[in-house]
Structures are given as C-alpha cells and as structure tokens.
Length: 216
Ligand code: AP5
Image 1 (tube, rainbow, N blue to C red):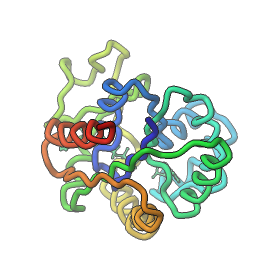
Image 2 (image 1 turned 90 degrees about the vertical axis):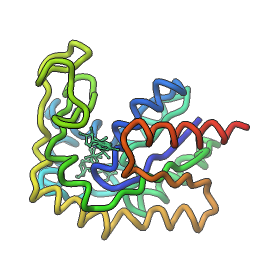
Image 3 (image 1 turned 180 degrees about the horizontal axis):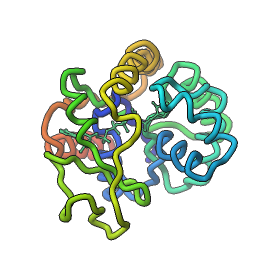
Image 4 (image 1 turned 120 degrees about the vertical axis):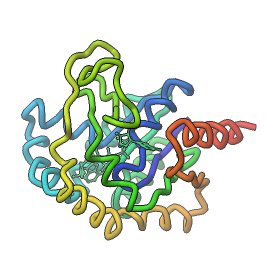
C-alpha cells in the first residue's frame, strides 16, 4: 500500500503515521524527520534546509523531491508519505517519479483540523529524537515525564514549535500546501477526508476504517 498523509502542521500526521505503519507494515517516510536527521548529521542538505525550517518556510522543491524519491526507492513494502508533497510542484515531481517506477498512490488521507486547535498541540508536543515517537505534555503523556516510552532517552521540544514559528508554518500551509488537496482532486485521486479535531484514538479509528474499506 502506498499512501500520502496531508494536513496542516499539528494535524496529527506523525502521530497517525506511527499507528498506520504498525497496522499495515509499511514504511513511514516523513520529509520533516528526514530533514531533521540530515541536520543532526551536519550534511550539506541539512545545512541548506536549516534556515528555512527554523523560520517556518518551505525548503526548496528540488531538494525535497530528490530526497523523497530516494527514500521511496528503498521502501519496496509500501509507504506512507508524511509532509510530502507540500506544493503542487512537489506533487508533479512525485507523479513523475511514480510513473517512471510504474507505481501509484492508493489513497490520500486528508486530516482536517481548524487552525484554532493547532497552537496548543504544537507548544505541548515533545518528541523522541531517536525513534520519532510523539507525545504531548497534557494529552499524550509518556509513562515517565520527559522520557521516551521505548527506552530511547530524553524527549525534546522542537525548535520550530514556538508560537511565532507555528504562526509562520500555518501561513505557509495556507499559502502553499492547502492547494495540494485540490491538485489531487483534479486528478481524480482517492481522497479520504478525516475529521482530525477528534481525540487521537477516534482519528485513528476513522483512518483505519477508511483504509480497510479500500481493500474490500
Ligand atoms: P514537518 O516535520 O513535516 O512538520 P509539520 O508538517 O509542520 O507537521 P508536524 O510534524 O509539526 O505536525 P504533525 O501533523 O505531524 O503533528 P503530530 O502528530 O506531531 O516539517 C517541519 C519543517 O520541515 C517545515 O516547516 C519545512 O521547513 C520543512 N519541510 C518538511 N517537509 C517539507 C516539504 N515537503 N517541502 C518543503 N519543506 C519541508 O502532533 C502534534 C501534537 O499534537 C503532538 O503533541 C500530538 O500528541 C498532538 N496531537 C496529535 N493529534 C491530536 C489530536 N487528534 N488531538 C489532540 N492532540 C493531538
């Protein structure tokens, strides 16, 4: 199965992806996680991406398309794309790569949530830099405060989760990314709209129901 998960920052893409990969045994290809790993490794790509990410702007399309196509190539068991594509240029780049590989996306999971819910989700988020697990200080607490449940060590707060940068990321989403849903609609893709304002488990239930129905 090959999926795309769309939604604004803080919609719960990473949270739901972890559950999707556990159930369907596919790879989680998160453009944000890959960029953060590149930054941590001090690679050229990581250095180029840094300024964009810290301000809440998008990293240039050509860098992202190359990075994600490379990641997809290694995922023969299928994948869920998280955070990519984020512009119509990236969506076109993805289409080209899929056509070249003779593959197609089975469905697009579109997480819908109002901007007003986003800020408290982001400022309370804590993530594991090693395994990528995502927590929240109020709504999804780890078993031991500040520590990953999987024994990886300390949780961190992302540098781009400050109110100012979250505001920029939301602006970027509305200006550049929201149009990606329209792009896929115009292509007649299977789009699964999900109310992502519900509690995390309810969102998961709705996602699983729709994905299970795909295979019937
Ligand atoms: P990226 O890492 O992709 O960030 P994002 O899209 O802004 O999304 P987030 O990871 O912040 O949120 P999420 O939807 O995964 O929410 P989560 O599940 O963690 O990108 C970061 C930066 O990298 C970008 O700004 C850009 O610079 C660059 N970049 C990445 N991809 C790019 C691309 N394709 N092109 C160009 N640049 C790119 O949940 C958030 C919190 O909410 C958690 O604490 C969670 O517990 C909580 N939560 C989740 N669901 C619920 C719920 N239903 N109810 C209550 N709380 C919830």
